[in-house]
Structure formats: C-alpha cells, structure tokens
Length: 473
Image (cartoon, rainbow, N blue to C red; front, side, top):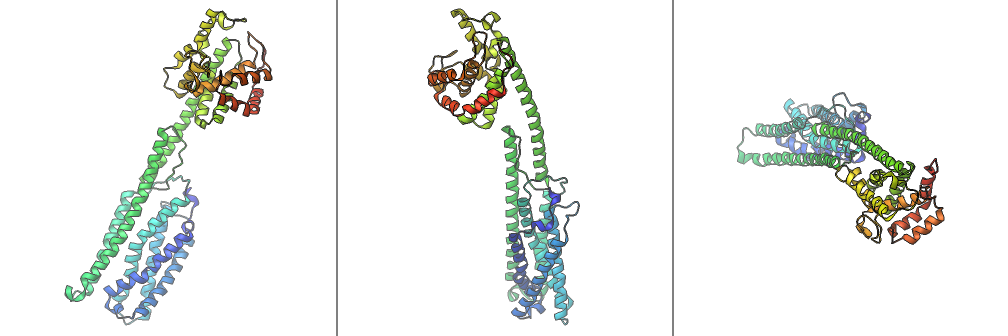
C-alpha cells in the first residue's frame, strides 16, 4: 500500500545517479544561461564560473539527500511521486538561494540584479525545467516498487498535470528570453547574436518538453493498456485481476474500480458455479438413486474424471468443468421405467433398446442450456457410452470423433461401476477390472486414456477409498 512507502524508498541507485546528473547539468545550462542574461557574470573567467557552480552542485546534492531522508512520511493529500516532486523543487529553490548568497559573498560589488539572475537560473532551469523530468522519473520508479497497490484517495488529475507542465514549460523559456532581451535592450539583433542565444534557449526547452511528453505519453499508454487488459480478462471470465496501476488519477481510479468490480463479479460467479455444481450433483444423485446406486458413485466419477483430464493435458479450468459436469452422465435414466432400470436380471432386446435411450434423453434435457456446466454435461450424457472402435451408442462415434469429455467419463464410469455392487451384479475385484481395461484398450476405451489410468492407478484407488459406499446392495 502507498502509506507503507516513504520518499527514501524511491531513491534506488539508478534514480540517485540520474538526480546527480540532473544537478550536474546545471554546470552547463546555468553557465550558458548566466552568460546570456548577465554581463557581470559574463565577465568572469570560464574556470571561475565553473568552480563556483561546482560548489553549488555539491551543496545541492547535500540538500537533496537531506530533504529526501528528513521527510519520512508522505503528507496527507499527496502521492509519493508528487511529494518527491515538491521536494525536488524545494531543493532547487534552496540551491538557488545558496548560489545567491555565495555570489553575493564572493562578488559584493556586483549589482543585486546579477545575483538574482544566478538565483533565477536554478529556479527556472532547475525547479521549472529539470524538476519536470525528475517528476516523471519518480512516477516510473514508484510504479516499479509498488506492484500491489490500493490507493485510498485519488487526488491527482491528468488535466491538471498537463496544465501544470504546460504552464511551466511555457513560462520558463519566456522568462529566459525576456532576461536575454533585457540584457541586450540597447543593441541591435544583428550585433548582439540575440537570435542565436534565443534559438539555443528555444531548442533546450523544446527538447525537454519533447522528452517529458514522450515519457508521460508512454506511461499513459502502458497504463491504459493495463486497464484494457483487465477488461479483456473479465470478458473471458478471469476475475483475478493482476494488472494493478499505481496512479492516484482518473486512470488509477478506473483501474481500481474495475479490479473491485472484477472481484465482486468473481464472487458472484463462484456462487453461481457453486449453486450449479450443487444442483448438478443433486440431479446426478437423483438419477443414480432411481437405479439403486449410491450418491458416492457420481462423486467418485467426478474426481476420476478431473484427475484423468489433468493427466491427459486439459487445462485446470476445463478439468474442473468436467468434474462439475460428469455427475450428470446418467441423468437420462430419470426417463427410464423402474421396471427396466432396476431389473435384477439381463434385459431383453426390447428393454436394452429402451435402456440405451437414456443417453439421448439426458442430452435432450441439457442441450438447450447456455451454461458451460450444463453444456459440458449434455456432451457427457450423450457420448459416455460411445466406444473407441465405433461400436457404442447412441451415434456409433469412433476414435477422436468422440468428445474427450465422453472418452474420459467412459473410463471413470465403467471403472467405478464394475467395482461397485449393482442390482444385477456383485462388485468385481481389481484384477478382473484391470484385465478388462487392458483387453478393451482401443476397443471400448481410448488407449491413451487407458495408459493414463494405469499410470495413475494409485491416485485413483485413493479417491475410491476416500468415498466408499456405506451400504451394499
């Protein structure tokens, strides 16, 4: 959270070096600035002026470090980057005051206006111009260290930020040009090289403005993309938003609102899915109860199906969907008469035909739903009796024409049915089941799934043991 960060946290080694370079740049900019606006400073030797400015540079570095480490708490109503920006401006103001007193001490015979012009170089070039670049640097660093952010107060404004930068980048060159013109007010343009000096100032300030605009625009574009990415994630039912934006302006507020909305939608979606799953399980148990089977059968089939799906290579979400849908594999049995459904002996040919209609009945019950769980359940109900060699029902599908949901559920359902007591048979022992699975590999079952079944048999048996039937038929 933002409140846990303090100004000194912004100061990585890279940021410090860039700040020192920003301060050091005054050796070049202030030198040219002072020479152009003040004839008295222009009269100093190059080495003397450079030495004086270097002393002020050292002083400015000390002031920076003091301010950044003295203020250990961000004032209320300010973001950390803006706090750092204000401290940066304050450091330039203090550096300008230091330059004023240093020159006043060294050259007391200079007019007061000469010292004020030196002071103005730090206030205009530093506090006005370079502080804009430093502000962007602080914002970028803040985004790096503040990956997980929750901002309580959105007190920044993009339009205000643009207006501030525009005013500063407009006023600073205007002041500089007026000072240049004031120095040469009694000379002609051709004789004073005013045009060259003004051109230098214009190029300098335009360059800084372009740099500021580029990086400010780049940050806006990056953060806008994150907002759009979050919307895209929500659109595709991923409500765990990870693209947080450390901004206290409109974009940050929109991003945080989208994140909050995503979490609320996610919670509602989880509740809906949980309700759907509970209904699916209940309906599956009802169908199994009509055929004198226990509710644990559908629970085991669900867990077997999920395990096989994951091992097959389906992603976690799809495996979870199959787990939720597979309990409905025999929902069509609710349309089969009890006399046939619970007949203890072998079915007649006519009864077998009726019994096989449960796959189509289940599909017809579920096929018109737009819900993912029920759409998956309709596939499972329709195709879990298809066989890999094409001899199954109801459509006689073959190989991979059978949906993977149907192929997986077939393995899970048959394994559990053979190992459980039914009205028409006793449970088979494991060796007999395993022998049948090996024989039916490539016939009844997908051979690849049979291999997966045996490779993970320990986990499958562990699931079976955890959900044993409490009564025997």
